[in-house]
Length: 131
Image (tube, rainbow, N blue to C red):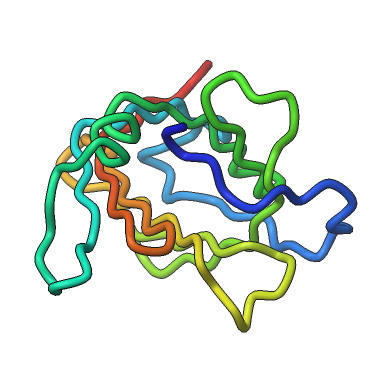
């Protein structure tokens, strides 16, 4: 399961290319989940079976066109990126007013970390440029 989100074949090309500061020149990132928790009905966060599977997932993010592919999936999700300084946020290009999948990428001190919110699931991990 991991990072699966709404399928988005045929979403069109409504996206904005994103560019990181010169410290991160690669347009392609390989991101590996390190931890995940799921929001429970009582408002607490818990590492349940869904979160355990998600914590083992991975993403490939193409910063040049906003495509996000998870765990070897054939189909990618088209996302729109917004950047502010060393932080980039990606949201689905299709129906951005009803966002159920958000990816935040933050670069600091030579390390790239990501966090992803999918409905009630929160996933975090690290990314590395793909040359």
